[in-house]
Length: 330
Length: 298
Image (cartoon, rainbow over all chains, first blue to last red; front, top):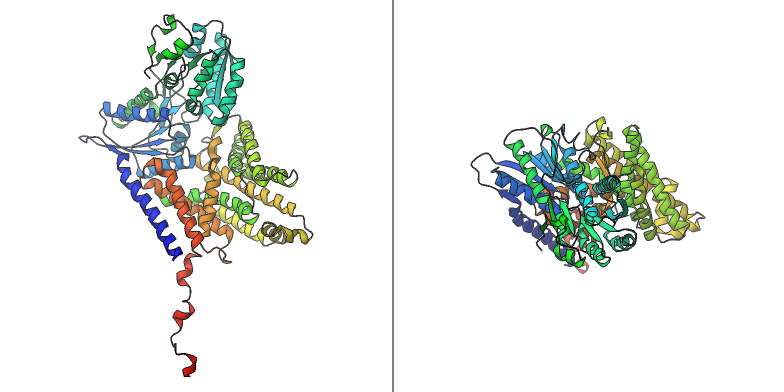
């Protein structure tokens, strides 16, 4: 009798899950009014993350604004690479008209899965290093997209603008992410040109952050937060520690400033998504080939600052650095 | 390429992983968590060799060999340094993380511009050949004296010692072969997906164990269907289930939970049912007796 009950319960569990999943899958598909051809677009996102979510929303909104009629199939690999490969293979099977891949492993999986279907990537810091494109100007194959490389030169310059005496800047980065290593190297090169020495600490899990921060604040005059998924998850901690030590902080993206980092001259993933949507329109509606569409970095950057942090650090709001800056809304 | 084909291909790659974990988890009864580090280790070793110009077949073989070294590390920790096996595995995994980053200097290595083992022919066929060869070799090995002693070490270590054998020798051997296979699986996966990434190994132990357990729902103690076969079948089924979950268009946030629930369903079924072929068994005594007159009447 017990055996039968267990068999029945397991059968019930599985069918419940499938039905529950099926019913909510309705929210998965997004059909815009069809007067022209409706294009099938597969969105492959690597993981749940505010920046990646923004890149997706910007893309969807951008397509709507440009009047492109799309039927979207959104899949999220939950951080698992073999899953992102299966997702890409599914899109290839479904013969979608375009794949939008958010984050490097998702884009690489898409490239591996199909050499014909146009692929647009976003939130990839170095597309050339990831071998997604032959070069930014001439991608060369069926892949092109937008890179989230921050205008680091402008951002690091902010340190010097705010306080000439700053010599050492600390960076925490996630050793798991290739994009982070690239940013640290770039920071070191740029820093060398403007007289800043970069002190970096690599961590592999989020639990290492408190200790890494403690050791870092003793050695540096300011902290720079790169666009890194792990740092983004612990950004409140970073800004708190920096504030305790009365340190000036500069961020790589505006979501950090919302969490307490002083200032950034940065990109918005949402806008990056819209840039990607423009590329999508050119491919789907205008019939251009991805090989002929140069990959782009963020076109627009905005200087954003956090007023609470500014006051807590005792800085002068009328300092020229903040003149054209926008105060971040909480 | 149909859903079935791609699921089977991924399933076969993970079948190699499952056979590796089968050796430690099932035969030696050792929980070896180092696989999370060994899997990407195999991928990164492959990437290193292929970027040096070595051909894909040899590069893949090198991944296997280096994997055995990882197994050696774990086994030395717990046989010689007397560190508990669970901890030894975790320590090896932690060490391998740094080693993996050091091998190529980056955490993500694209392999698009290099050849792969799949250039030799049809991917699914090549994988099938690889998996079957490994299975046959393993089965033959397990039938040798050394193989039996290895199995015995996991079952009853005292027995092995009473025979005058050094049980540690077999644990080391088992761990080396196991990790070699896991690394091989990592190299196969890297070639399949087109890149090696440091996060490839996360939660891979779950995939391996789920494959073994699912395989076990098919006649557990049969002599006909060997443990290695069950591991292969389990891995392929697990990936097919995953593929179906994605294809059904279920809410992407629920994907992981759905995979876990399906595994739970298999495990509970496995724990309470003996095997699925029970319906084909002969009816129990009472039901098959037609003439039920008591003996006194004769």
